[in-house]
Amino acid sequence: MARSTIVELAKAAGVSPTTVSHAFSGRRYVDPETKARIVALADKMGYRANPRARRLRTGGAGIIALASSMPFAVAAGPARLGFLMEIAAAAAVTALRGISPSAWCRLWSPTPTSTRWKSTAP
Image (tube, rainbow, N blue to C red):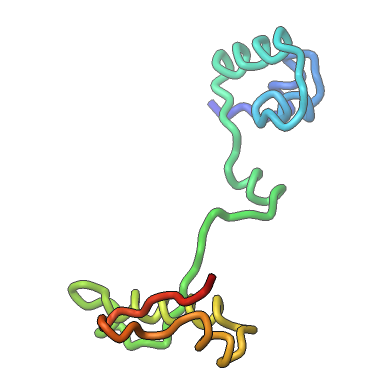
């Protein structure tokens, strides 16, 4: 048996596909009785939201892709430390972009009693 669609569920519930969508997403108000009827029919019909259709509609994949210039043997080593260090360096460069070197020096300076860096910002 084929999986039920949102259109079939809407017809069975006597509402529009948009109302079914709102009942499941919670983005808009749907009368509680109508929502309960839609959910009960969805269970009965075996309806499940189609994640591909949702991604197509929202434009989001929920995936972050990372590309590395590091050779695979180094990046995928036992601890994957090289890859993580490359990500951290890229994040730091992005975060610091737009801050002048003199401002950076005013914000951070080494303390004389420690090898750790300490913020001197107010």
